[in-house]
Length: 123
Image 1 (cartoon, one colour):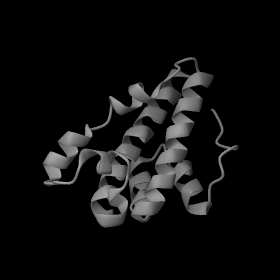
Image 2 (cartoon, helix red, strand yellow):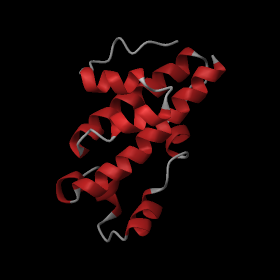
Image 3 (cartoon, rainbow, N blue to C red):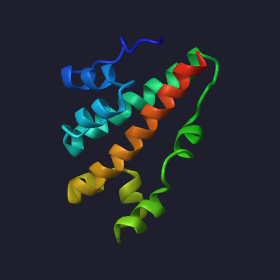
Image 4 (cartoon, rainbow, N blue to C red):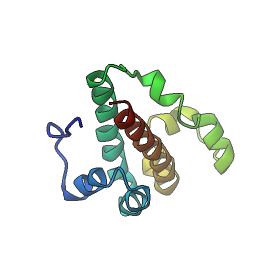
């Protein structure tokens, strides 16, 4: 399996990574992160998926990942948000609506986890 060795992660993020294969524990650990911390988790897993996909010859792009995630406009409509769409896309709402932004990030992180599991199956 591809290693996360080059990513700097603290113990809690490492625990999350250690439990990628156990969805229940992964979700439990994910729920312990604050919204701002979730931004870091998303970046780590996003980069990991891109790197790992290249290692196994799948070469995922940003488009490959985002097409699997709920479109921002749909998310905003579903939660009743009236902010500008670019606020949500750029994580600007993390300052004004941290819980909402955190929930959006968690859903994206769960998609990234699912993709990692799929990549492992392909290896």
